[in-house]
Image (tube, rainbow over all chains, first blue to last red; front, side):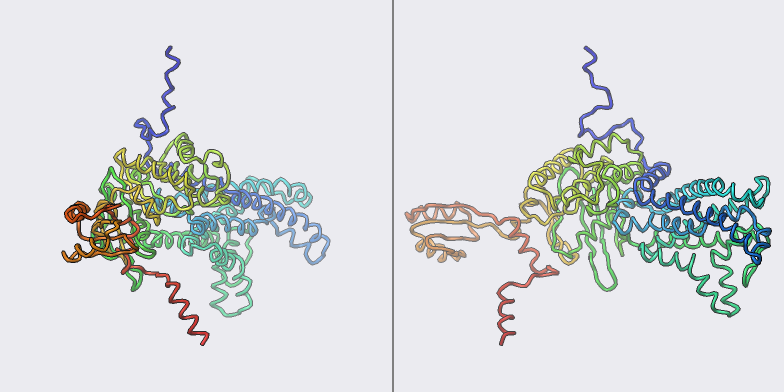
Length: 285
Length: 314
């Protein structure tokens, strides 16, 4: 009876080498490993869910506050200057924070738990790990922002319609603000990934991220020195308003063009990542 | 095959590993011994490319570890059972590592079964006992079916059944022609498992070679005799300049002569013997003797502490 012959995949557990299987290291494999790392942790799902929910809720609240603005004779004229896309992306600051935490944990979670040693045992050249994490974060952040923005669009639409603010999909300004939101959140994720790789500590990285992304613009606004005001203009949030506002809103201190704003935000992602890459190569793990 | 040449690691002014050279051959189990702080872990971390040597080189299967295209296929390492994210399940942890080398999921299940983690593979590692964490670390080391295994304290936290399992596993892996390099603090375990020993202290190699040779180099063997005529025999031996100790009445411990020679001497003088046994030191005794000058963190003898306490009362 030939049916007694074992199928080829059932081998004795100790027969380890299977010549037929291409079991070499590859970037695609590493990429898959980083996806499994991200998606097999509850913290990732919590962070992603919070990002979507909070972004949607904040934009919904912003849309609902139009009623209060309209009722206030002083505020009412400002509605005319508003762009619907700005209302829809109104939750991007809160999204920035949750995404920043995700980017930080992606690497500091490995250092704090010791997982990094398993990671570097599998990929001792180290740099591909940073690259794979960056790619995974870019993809994940883009998808999550797209979901958050779409949901925000849907929940705010009835209210925006009442003020004739539903953003036209053929308006380049709409796309600049919505794509700019995703771009900014991707940069925030890469910023904390880079800082996290440098500092190797969750608390330290989240502190730096909170300070640079959120607190410094407010804190420094009390200092009316010219150079401080210039500096504030180059901090992430003020710089991002150069492309996250559809109108010609003037920013305090410096008025960056949309292109300049995009370049400044890129620097916040690139500089820490390059520093991280250099440190990763040189340091003991 | 692991080869180190003049391997050195300094942290600031401290030299953790001091120009050590060694070669670990395939097909056998090599035990790595040394007191705490002797440089064992640093050496293993340098082999794995986690720490960069200050000077010198170390290669695994002919290349520095980070030059291998598929390092998990070359070396499986258990350096630290806690090199795992506690929020991930054992299976997910192994899958993340397997994915980097395109190792099929079937192999992940295989090492889970081999290490007896079948029942808990879906549970988060944070809830694992030390022994389960250790099994997961061994599973990760086996994942790539590597030619060389580096295991730092693999039996740490394992129950007796687990200890025996590790012993059989590493013996089996060596018998398949693989290189096995393991450290342990359990001397009795090392004596049963290892073929060769590499003993280091204060970052330098103190002894290296087959287990029995390392033991003999320290103790030089000895003979134990029980005899109603112990006193006379001791006198005869002492007359020949042989070192004789008598730990208890009618018992002698003799160094520097073979059991045959003692037996012949006793027979020639008509002395009755109740016991004549050649004794070799245990690995533990040999280890203590080898490393006594190289212990970094010595525990204070209890007697000395008592004296100090009395002194402070006065």
